[in-house]
Image (tube, rainbow, N blue to C red; front, side, top):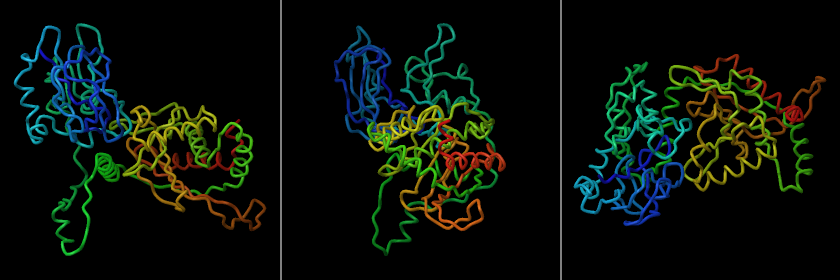
Length: 429
């Protein structure tokens, strides 16, 4: 029986994508692992690999098609001995169906079901397991099942070869939902808001995939995460002097350290000094991480990414600097792979280069905290001798998820960050 090739979920937040380019043609023979197509997600453009071997019998979705729902058929693969005549009428119906029908066939996942940066998101392939108790399920279906406490062995799959897909898990019996503390008032619809400005000149801007995800995720984060904020002023004079000396020595190697590189290192070490703060919220439990995986916000056209520097506490400042530049370049080109922007327990958002003195950042779930970094400015201070002096001072604000980190623990962590930045040589010991 011909096998339908489905639109894969290439990231945890992907609900639909653009089929940017086919790398095969009808009639081509493919093997498992061969590249089939390039898919544009809300995060990046990624290559999609074949799961089975066979011959491409029919391409259902043309190049450049936008809004292709996850788990909807995009092509048909013929096994040995099969021909075009074996392609079922179902596949033909899918090919010619209007967008509404495709949407009914693969309803989008709720935003709450897909943390943006945590769960791994390899291409949707069957899980490898031993014969006998083999369970075929997409990564997205497995994650939703884990979130809802659903036993996949009790779920009947509707995908190719009985594979369990998102719709199967969503229709299965789930754990009872926790009622919200208070009803959320209805938000006026787009047409109602437009009517308010009908006598004014305006431009209507459609939302792309990234902006939709940002709106959904941060709206959810601000409503559901109990934020509180801790603020400290940090003197940067010793760091700036040390950075200047280090950059002179590193010039021959083509390395130039930024203040942000020191901030990344300081936070990574602070997570080791205060390991209780190196934690994330996991619904009904807290997960404490051992390595310091630090996410850093990078502004891109139309939104932002938060690539993750893994094991940042173990890396030198020059390595962190080089890696951060490489990840930022990939982010701006929307070429980050899932493992490069998922994970971490903590994030840094630095707006100091824009002259912002201080601000409150929104936590990116399931992170336990995020550090908002402002600009360093010269200002009068009282030195250790009680005398008035001038120092370069940077204001930082730590946004904390109170479910994960209590006030005293957050204060201890922020104090460790301050100590590291005000004593930069100590970070090299």
